[in-house]
Image 1: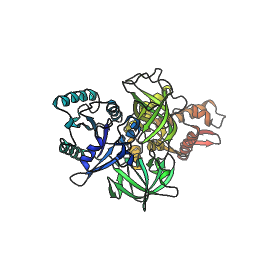
Image 2 (image 1 turned 90 degrees about the vertical axis):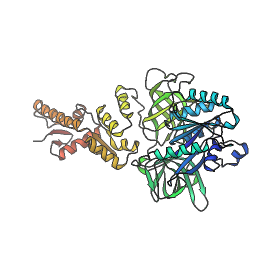
Image 3 (image 1 turned 30 degrees about the horizontal axis):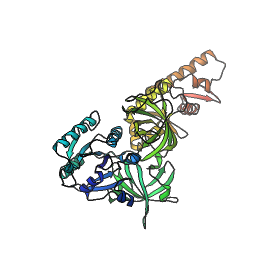
Image 4 (image 1 turned 180 degrees about the vertical axis):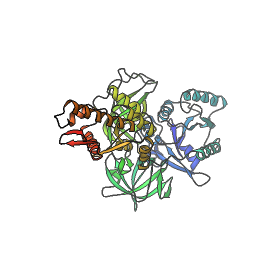
Length: 502
């Protein structure tokens, strides 16, 4: 289980992690000098039974919210920290909003520094906290008074974390491997090491990977998972990967990169997504609204392109297109957060729907129907809905890649839906069985009618035939389909014409 901290600066997050684990996550000299966390810190707590809990300690200062976001992505459980002497503060609210936007459903709220507050103060702050939590995923979270000075609540919190870890189902590892890099460094005698949370899939020592979006090729020399040597890293683990390769060195990999299965390397800079604007946003989100987009551990400039007719008001939700300043490595279904360009406030967030968003006709009715299909998280439901939506076919290879599906999962999708498929160049075009039978029936009827009306002509021109059928396949795909039908003896090809098999 990966636990992340959240809360205002100087509310005791780092001290709390130290009390639980005995590890000081402030590793930088500047942090020790200033007495303030400015970068991500990591610690581990052994769990009875041999496993361990990983902690990601984040900075609380408003100037480091971007760093907090890099650490909060991929956590399973959040510890929202509120100091009893200060109470709810600005970054308490912003960190809570971020955790809610990221979809973290499990967590606890800790009333820290309780040695500095009497019963009345504790009650007042507790009431404020419950008011702030209302309407969020942490509304019913445990609230535990703690003090690292007296030890109050520490054992109770440790027991709660052990219980949560024992009930946490391990994330499925059937998809392809992705790890979001939050640190890259060099160890003497070891080489380049990157750390991060495994977002999906698994990998082993000796596997080849790609650093995306740069495309740098690398091989995994060794793995540490949950701070222990391991042969494999799996979804949900905090991993350190020792990478080797021709151009692999510390400065070639940075926070925000994603280590991926080579099949997944396909960065995107134009993404259709859902967007939920926070109720406290100052004004509606208009066309081409500039933002800073945060996904996993990366941050990039972007503009919000509306797909509807009206601006998105505070508290509103809508589908939008995100046009990025530079490409990122992502997967459909991933969560993201957007902040204003001055990095002073969080605006909202949502889920990526389609990584291959079009630059033209993005608001066409057919396109909006497709987006409704992409919004379905279950691959089999999304695929079935895409086949029902115009143009009634899609590239299964791209669909599987953008959802990080393994070969086994893709084959299961083909078998479950009975997909009819054709290889066209780099694409794997698929149709539903019903649509394919209707296509062949209409094709045959069109050829019969044409020959009855034009007995002296050899057949129908390819393009004329293509544009008259549903679905209207791309020209290259249509020719590939006709050739397949010709090999099966269902149609005959005569130069640039198609005709019935005599």
